[in-house]
Amino acid sequence: MIQEAIAKLVEKQDLTQKEAEVVMNEIMEGKATDAQIAGFLIALRLKGETIDEITACAKVMRQKASTIKPKAEFLVDTCGTGGDASNTFNVSTAAAFVAAGADISVAKHGNKSVSSKCGSADVLAALGVNIELQAKQVEKCIEEVGIGFMFAPLFHPAMKHVMPARKETGVRTIFNVLGPLTNPAGAESQVIGIFDPTLLTDIANTMKNLGSKHVMVVNGDGLDEITIAGKTKVAELKNGKVKVYDINPEDYGFEISPLNSIVGGDAKENAKIIEGVLKGEKGPKQDIVLLNAGAAIYTSGKVNSFKEGIEAAKQSIDSGNAFKKLEALKKFTNSTN
Image: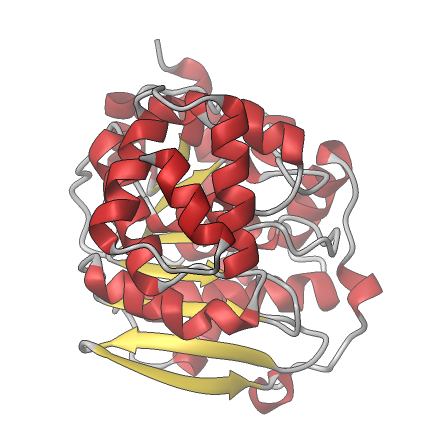
């Protein structure tokens, strides 16, 4: 089927949901060659992914994943697609600790870098977190610590069939988008940063198809985060409806800061930045984390507005709770047998 699908995509024809499901199953079961997978991914990217195609691929990935069901009143994920080529530090990873410090359970899902200098797994490892916990251990970690990290290769073993093609092509593909859509803990509340603003409403509607409750899909002027450097476009799924609007940091008391004020580096450098933010160092780096953590707290349902979410995020850092969550995660993950 994958050859037929490539032929259709090259002619700029959309796949039906069923066709996309069949192809994705072939890929995830190791029945397609690296060349076929690369051809499919590039052809799909050039044509542009539809809601049906994204939904189908996400469904198959979810079916093939190892899943967990942590007991949690408020459960969120903060996960960007990567692929924005901006070299900012790992904002959504820092935001995860801040949300956890506000008594939100965080099921953080991520990977090592594929299309950026430093992925969430890279920076967490540099911070001293053991990222290679098995499913049951992560479930326990979320319940006891309030935050856990699901390392994508351990939760999506079928992805091993895709990695060579992804690495060799080195460009962003539908798999950048699929990561945040396939949270193994089934978090129904999420902040999803995406690299392509044209996909905002498509991703929000895909999340609706997949059964999510409250999701903010964001693109901050090209960043896969809510930005501090200008306006952020948002597609928010809430109560079964998708609403599109802009976030202006100045409306929430933040100064606009240039992109170079939030640039990171390698894993070691980004770990240092995150520690500084969690310990209360003020400035643009903390501001962007507060915006993104505020969104996560808001989607969790614990507060009623984005503004209240930002206030809770500030409290999380100022009280020392956010940094304590990092320390607790390090302790738990390194003492687990």
